[in-house]
Amino acid sequence: MSILVTGVAGFIGMHAAAALLARGETVIGIDNLDGYYDPVLKRARLARLNGLPGFAFLRADIADDGAMDRLALEGVDRILHLAAQAGVRYSLENPRAYVRANIAGHLNLLELARRRGVSHFVYASSSSVYGDSGSGPLAAAAAADRPRSLYAATKRADEMMTESYVHLYGFRATGLRYFTVYGPWGRPDMAPTLFARAMLAGEPIPVFNEGRLARDFTFVEDAVAGTLGALDRTGDGHRIYNIGNGRAEPLMRFIETLEATLGVKARIDLRPMQPGDVLETCADIGEAARHFDYAPRTAIDEGLPRFSSWYRSYYGPNM
Image (cartoon, rainbow, N blue to C red; front, side, top):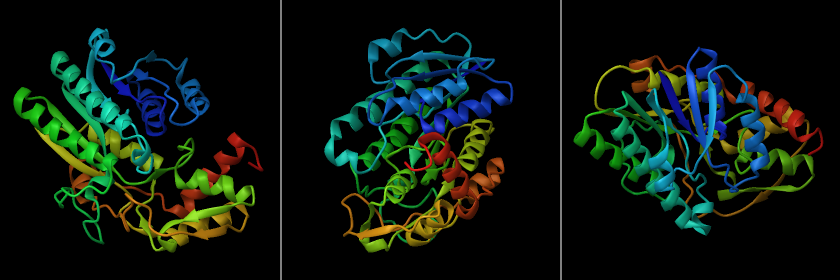
């Protein structure tokens, strides 16, 4: 049987597909290679998968109803749905893109899961759904009814839509609230790449809320281990889990660690709080640990050097 992975040319998607293939699974990956950020990076990720035994790629847009209805997916038993329009700040500029990809696209995947009678539907949600629910580790049962961005609202809507489909049609589903995933092959719109590029170019880096922010930075290998653990979980119904590192790192410590790994001092441009942002994210990962032995191992002191090494090898030593 095969696993369908959407967003397979994305950051987590590529790493998850590679991990599935490494353990002998058959993977059908789909992606539309859209231009939200440079598709060259997406094609480079895809090149790492093409030619591997058990992998097939289909270019498709999950929000295209007709294309999704016509997909021939014989043998697909599980779906790992990671495709989405990402980014909190971009949702202020182009809100329709989020409704199209994250709501209409998610509905198409739910319909596909219903029609095919899959055994398990696993999908990406986000820590953004918590909004400003408070400091300290947040459990999946914490309030998630006051999103601070449209991006967060669409991911919370995905969770509610999935709940209704599981109730109506009885398949098993798992939502994963990812907390600030970073590492090699990461998105260019996220802090590690934005900061590294600016620092190596001698340009200032924007630091919002004057640096008084904290994030649960999750290394991509840990996030993928949690993703595969969730995909393998037993039990019925719809469950939601946090996939994080279990600690809130101050943003300024993150920057200091990146300075040490790159050997470059950052020029800090302190700015006020950005609309849609939250002050702190921190995951309570106890449920994931109990249900599928999730145990992240990579602190930023190890993860950022590995990111920096990849960054220099991919973009060049001075980019």
